[in-house]
Image (cartoon, rainbow over all chains, first blue to last red; front, top):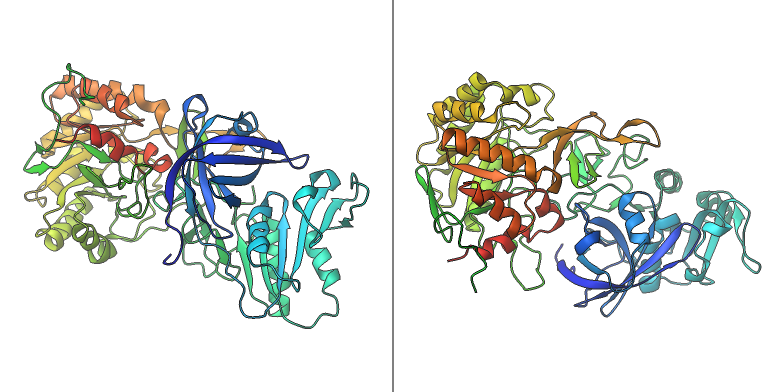
Length: 270
Length: 305
């Protein structure tokens, strides 16, 4: 991990929380110290006082601006329910930055970014830092209300499983984000590198698309984590070669798609 | 500043003796919650402290004779005021531990205790012998902790450590090979009378016991009606088990007078003080170490000389 920012435990406060789509919230933390991160890295977040959880929760970092850190979350369980109830001023503590980031651009190779739901932050951060005009940036949601439109500038194209609730003036292709990629890439011959983050079926489809075209593909996996810094072996992902497990927190969360077994029942399908 | 209360039995600051060894401090990290002990060394605390500062020992992740792949995911689940785990003793195996991990701990001057598990009493002896043969010259290797109670191992699991005669046999096997290192038996709380297990460990030659290992627990995912862990049940730890752990330590101290390293639900200094109040010799920080890499070091700071 040489050359990467050193992880720190930093205290702070919730500066704000807002809904960015029907299912997604953005939380902004005001930290006591600035942290640096690379796109794809994550933080382990917990609270102090009444909201303290037994285990911190992992979140990809959307953006850091000085001492302000933004992340996105969706309510999926007790921890994220508690986060949705957070108020400005609540004491928070986070360990960041953690994990292996997405690789920076390689030469002139254009990229294909495939983000699904709350899998947006690492790719949003990647595009903000390294994105170029030749890249294709695609976001997929369940329907129009599930898309965080305000986060997606003109450089992003959207797909929705169900073409309803798409706001006036916005466009969303009906289908999966990988369908949309297939359509937009139809007839294109130049190679790309694929970066994907989202639900397991999206990662599998992204890996399949890349394999079919002979392209590199990097995926960021989502797993339940205990520690986030490699000591508990709780967040394992099966290796593609059958030789045991890799950890999402330390070996990942970003892997070459050929490194890990993304088959159903393997990595985080739950 | 003296943050320690007057009622504490004796002076708990600085080093202390346990069996044949002098440990540099009474606050340790527990096995399985802090890797092999070096995983947190690159992290930076808000006050600049290292996660290893002032620790009396790190107890390594449990090592077995052969490497173990561990259990399928999900392996960890936040269940209310505690955490369920089903890691399945994933580890690099004794040989790689001796070749790579132990030398790194020694070189980093981290005081350490090696946690080992076997599938038969004789294996504890064989492993302790090999450990001693390879690490006898290490000054930072202080002891062996026998993991007699990990509930996740299919071929023995919790029953293995529930039987006093088996506990005694395991300890005896290791005691013959432990030489001048402290020998601890880590006991399961999933029994009616833990003091009986502690007595068996003492009869086998243990210098003390570590109590408690995780409670057997499970949780159900209400969206599917199925257990959250693929192997159904796992080890339950964290703040929820602190009162249980305290009662078990109290039972052992009262019933046997053996030195007890208390563990279970300790997150901060106040929690640790409760264990010392019932007579624990030292304490270990487990699950809290996963949430906060500096939890044990923060507590240890209060016991510095």
